[in-house]
Length: 170
Image (cartoon, rainbow, N blue to C red):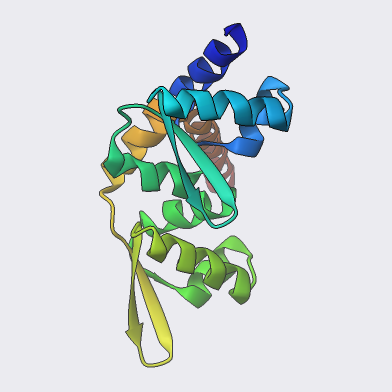
C-alpha cells in the first residue's frame, strides 16, 4: 500500500508521466508497477492515455484540455518546435533549418503535433505552414505549473541566449 501511495503521489506531482519514466524514476519493476497502476485505475485515482507506443498517466481530475499539451511537451524535439512556433507560423524547412533537424524528423513530429491538435497545418502548393493552435500564455502556464524543472530549463536557456547576444554587442 505504501508503494501505491508513492506512485500516486508521483503521478499527482508529474501528470502525464510515461509508464517507463515512472518505472525508472521510482525504481519499480514493470510487473509491480502494472499491478499498482491497475489498482489505482480501478479505484478511480488515475487514468492513462496511450498515444503511439507510449502510455501517459494522469491523476484523477486532471484538466482534459491540458492532457494533449502535456503529452506534446514530454518530448524535447516537440518542445523546441512549439517554442519556435510561439514566435509565429513556420514552414517545415524553416523549422528543420532553425532546429538543425532532418526533414523526415520534423515531418514526423509535426504529424504528431497535428494529431494532438496542438498545431494546425496549412498546405500552400508543395509547402506546409504550421501554426500553433494553443494560446502561448496557456502553454507557458501549463509548463510552469506541471513541469517546473522544464520551466527552469527554459529560463536557463533564455538567460544563456540573452548573455550570448549581450557578448556580441560589446
